[in-house]
Length: 98
Image 1 (tube, helix red, strand yellow):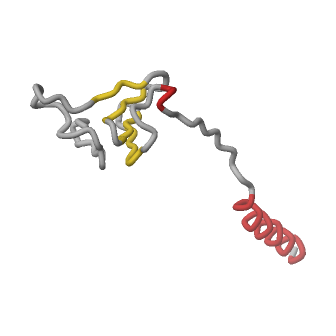
Image 2 (cartoon, rainbow, N blue to C red; image 1 turned 45 degrees about the vertical axis):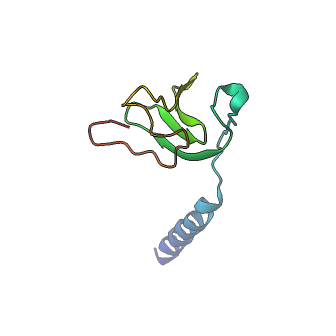
Image 3 (cartoon, rainbow, N blue to C red; image 1 turned 60 degrees about the vertical axis):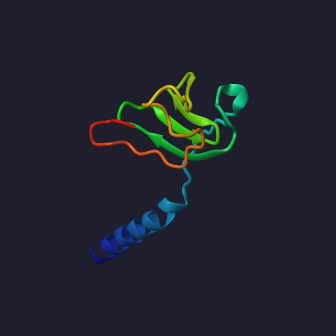
């Protein structure tokens, strides 16, 4: 009985020490201006509650839906537009506003 519990403990310790060394595979895709991003210099990224990925760059705020980018930039005639084109930080409110 003691031998079984020692071998069980050994297998448990072996699994615990080996598990962290097994790497997960991640797939990355690089997006640039040629793909629709407003600028290649990215300062911040946020995924909102709806699943959109928001990317702040030196040339506007980009919303990515998984297929296309929509770019938001400063508009002097629109009080609800960005205050400038260089986006330093993105925050989502509890209500889901960006």
